[in-house]
Amino acid sequence: MNSNEQMERLLKELNQEGKIPKLLLHTCCAPCSTTVIERLLSFFHITVFYYNPNIEPESEYKKRKEEQKRLLKEISSKNPITFLDCDYNNLEFENIAKGYENCLEGGERCHRCYLLRLEKTAEMAKQLGFDYFGTSLTVSPYKNAFIINQIGKELQEKYSVNYLISDFKKKDGYKRSIDLSKKYNLYRQNFCGCQYSQKEKKNLTFIK
Image (cartoon, rainbow, N blue to C red; front, top):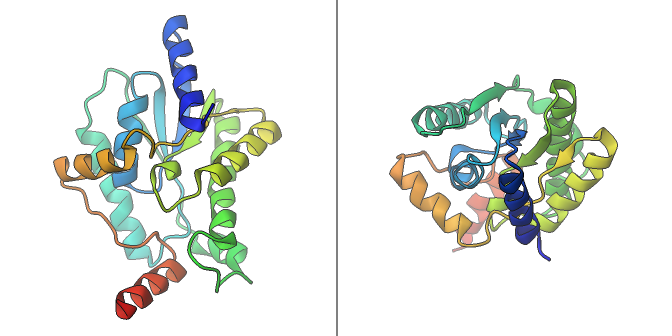
């Protein structure tokens, strides 16, 4: 059973039991969160957790955060969606990226970044009494859902909070995120977030 099938089985069980648990959902940006929220809002009381110290510069971080907040105001849902912010601290990312600056996008530096953001989410979920924590990262075709889910399951054991396993890119999830981004007229960035991904994007564009 793949990750998406595992998630769908859980959603079916929650629906049959009439339970609506509290989910702390880490989101990387508004466009990626669109299809994720759409799929989950009938099954959870969602709090969007915006923790992305990898994004540079700070002006870009603020731009993406404001788009995330705007999207939440425009989504209609019978279950309210709340927003939990984190102070911007790029040094947290730079500390875990040391020694991995030259890794290609999707490599070990990215895996360390997944861990950084997911662990903060798990910590907050435990501290605030959430039933589940999860992330929108798996909607991207450029992110390794297997690695993300492995990290999530390890953190589930560490913090004793349920991790919502997922692969939101399945069933045209990424395509749906593009369609919804157009519907809500969202800003869609052309690089993941950190200075290294931005440089790699520029280099690839130059080579082409």
